[in-house]
Length: 373
Image (tube, rainbow, N blue to C red):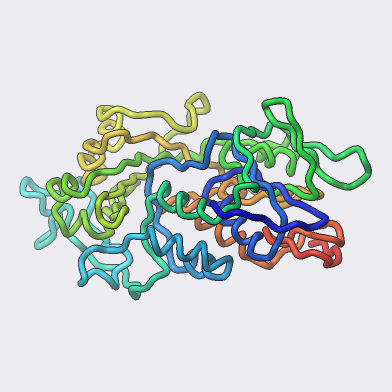
């Protein structure tokens, strides 16, 4: 971790030390904005899964801070074959319903065969990353005195000293007072109810009707299962009411696989739970070629993706919400970090705030006047 942080007459709290929280922290430190990052866990950590970031996220990271972009470049993985460098994803046959006994869905095309490539020029601003490795690189640029661990936020309140500050209340009984609060606290956000009101249905995540099986497969094993063409390069198998996407991470040592699919909402399920091979096979059935690929991915989890319910506010006084829960990422690439990165940089909205420092779409600019919406 870095060693020092700026000193100013105001300070911000960032709730959540995931990818979006640390990207925001590094960006604010670049502009000498004093911050404290509150993380519920005992240390910074990420789930062991892959995420694919496109060139729009890469450009946002460059603008936010060269350090963030360098962390991405250091950990990203692109297609492993030179002839696939200019391919974003290869679209493949994934619907087995009309396949004959030899797997042909039409003359010359079998299940799993390539249909076409989505072209995208090779470059340094896109690729798949192993989330934990990316986070580890970001942590190196967070000063030691900025992070507070074991701080699980349970509520917020307005300070009673007429300062206009916010008070954060933590599960361990402690409190902290800051000029403004920015929430990067994920699907179980406690800043979201403060923004919208605890009685607003949009304050709490609801099941969207989509779930996703996700897994990581060692590249050697993935090549044996799928062939090197598929395992070492990004592919999307388009099936009936669903698809499977794969792409390499960890510099080609691992293949990330994910299969988002619709299902009947079930409010009694937890947000994530480990699924067995039989359940996976029953849910995917024959709709998508390659379901056996994920059956062989140990530790697959059933993920329920967040709601797409509209929000009527992006801030409430000195509290601002950032991250995929604000506008859930239901895209097939599940790019919550991309959404957060873009919001850290965007400049199209100015929430109400104090003259000495107002939150401007995730960035704080000292000494600027209130501008409202």
